Structures are given as C-alpha cells and as structure tokens.
Length: 84
Image (cartoon, rainbow, N blue to C red; front, side, top):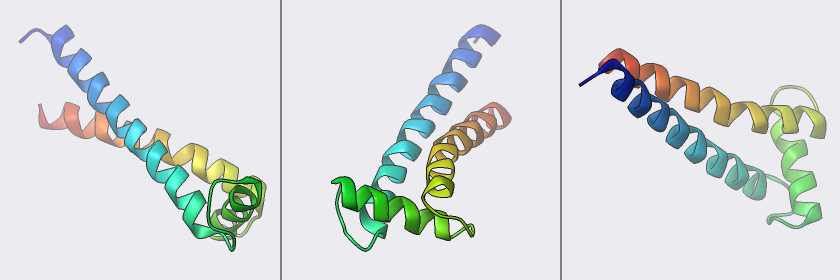
C-alpha cells in the first residue's frame, strides 16, 4: 500500500475518532448538568458542570468540550499511524 493511501486511512481514522469524541462531548454536556437535556438550561448547566471539573465555569466547559474531540481525533490518528 502506498504511503498516500496509508495517510488517507489515518486521516479517516482520526476524523472518525473526532466525530465519536464530539458525540461523547454532547452527551456529557446533556447528562452532567443539574438540568438534564439539550435545552438552553440543560446545556448551560452541563457546560458549567463540565467546566467546574477544571476549576472554571461555563466558559471553561466550552473549552473542555471543544478540546476533547480534537484530542481524541489526534490520539486516534497517532495510534493508527504508529500501528501501521
């Protein structure tokens, strides 16, 4: 298999990992707040709960939930490249 085909497969694996991470982030936000759900109050309380894990509030929750899929995608990409 050529290196460009391997690179494309690694990118696909990383994108899949990032997609799964994004779904997990939305689920964590929806379930972790004092108001469960994806309405305005559920998202607000979920982001605040996620942000409180790192000592912040809602803004920190936004940063954590945005960074998680990127980190998961990069990890899956690196793992795929390392294993192949």
